[in-house]
Image 1 (cartoon, rainbow, N blue to C red):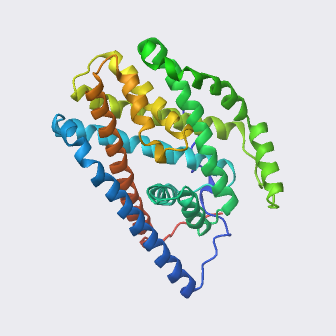
Image 2 (image 1 turned 180 degrees about the vertical axis):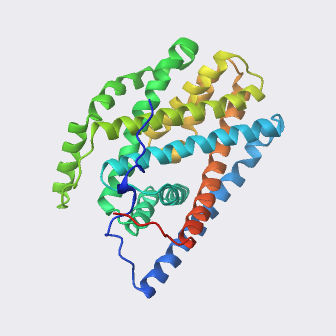
Length: 332
């Protein structure tokens, strides 16, 4: 399935809501965002450095070309996540240019490294507002990504792990009960009904444009693309640590999706720390011994953190360059 491109057509241009802020207010906003970026990058770098002692042995067994290829797969997976969020936002009525969407999404995502759960959505709401995206629409797109990720991730785990992992993941069979509930809950009528009720309870105006079936399918397509890239990323790591063959690839796809879903559900663990590693080790047990599988899980987490930091920096640079280029094209 090829998801529709939200950038097609004249709607790709931000609407008239993006009113320039007064100079003093704009300067304060830039300062606050710079501080946010510096703090988030600091916490992200600290998280990467703090894990180095845990993964040094695993990395020493991996070649640089293999590590580079795995990191490229992580960047592709993170890009798919951004495109999923962008497709949702476009379907809700706020299409963004690719560079703008990348800046808002990737810089905002750095907030997950700052203690507290709401920094990513708050950052995306504030940055999106300057591009004409209502805060409620940014929040809606942000929170919708999680059930879509969860449903698609569980689907990948169901397709791969029962056949290839067997008893090693039997303890997680209860997760299968969530899949039909999530799929039913993602029907546009259900989503729009829940969103409408929530906005009424918060005494906020209803969404101008409800979520459509096309929007759900487009975002789900990007989610599955992201899981495929994450699976390739982990497969390259486990290949370097001694696993090989099609079974290792299938288990890598299922292991990463299962680990992410379980880490998200077990909310008492910050960012799924510990929970994800245990699930990944269990799923990789048929092809890697416990200690080696743990090394693979820790290397994977570090590479994903590096990908977050790289994309945030690249997206910020691309958006700054785009702002410096004068716009000569006219739009209807």
